[in-house]
Image (tube, rainbow, N blue to C red; front, side, top):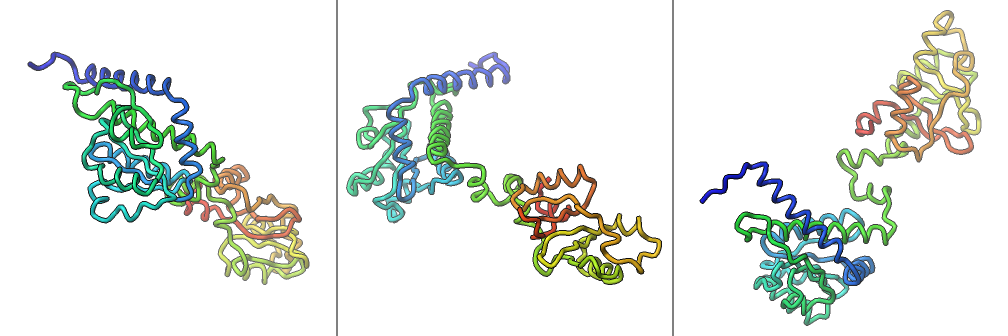
Length: 320
């Protein structure tokens, strides 16, 4: 007989069931979780995650989260493990094996292997007396809570709790290792995440790309340099390479009268705004917007010109 309950009410019931289980699990974390985090954080090899069915899907995500947060990790499918993939698992690794019941038959080869070679294993299971829990170094127990599906059988609450437990493990290990935003960028160089961590030094123009002139050069030379380098600016540097001024398109327009007869130093904006090479590119983009300029000289602590940053470089890198 079909329940007379709206989809929204049904969905809310599922979420509340899972939230209650998550709260129960959060309250139960203790020494076993501490030991599991210590095992992962001190692992000399890789963290190998395995699980069958829905547990496998969650295991894939846990492995990906660990890998992206500084802990080398990958997923090994239990069925493939017994057909050669056990060769991926080494004695300096740590295994995380997931099974709600703790009796998943496809995991037997993995359990036999880690037991034979004395490989540390973290079990994630609901049953403390299961085969998986008994063969583990540390067992992380899922709450004894009902599945949220209408027949109480489809993995719902259990997989949600497993996913949350994996996230908790990864974040705790991040903190133990002192994993910072800068480290995160190393593993996320692409897309919008990567763009948030690009620094000026990653995209600035350097070397022969820099439009450099001396203060005593005629403006005819300056125009040639500006045109050839295509940045819309020219930087005046002294004999030591220190920035002594900048000439922009705006400076040219303001000095059109007798421009060609003038010297670079007569037209330049002295003491221009600059930026450091270690500044995040997105911050440089914001600063150029505030100053209403399209390029910024990049200088070191001594005032020496080390690069030139153009707004187009930032936009191409997605730093906005």
